Image (cartoon, rainbow, N blue to C red; front, side, top):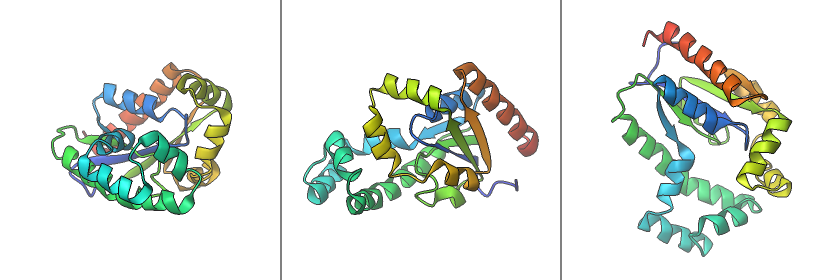
Length: 195
């Protein structure tokens, strides 16, 4: 790990659907890190009139549920949607980071590797969910197995993400255990980067 090339030490936090990324992000925030979620930014972008207009022009709808249903079955449409949203998400993150005083910033990026953003952060952290815990999180979210499989097919396989990630954290037990692992990582980063 080299010195950060940014004003913040940037952690790119990723993982497959229902791996526990949001729980990990909340742990980082509790410890004092600045945190941003790409999914939250996308939800806000869907409310922006200029984005809604462009979505309707490209896909005939700006409704997030209809878009998700359409793009997960259509690779070309998914690429079009990503080409529209990804630059806007990154720009918004840069704007928000400028307002954040914390030295460590954790960016929750579900498509970190798929978008090629691994070079924009200092460290990539992958949360790997165990099947049992993943099933419970999917149920809590109301996602059926078919929808989960369909969405997962749009992402890199977890084995490939493991090869690309700097740090892999297995999340196969309790939220408390995950919090303990994130705390250990945070303390190690404090030692390395002196923040």
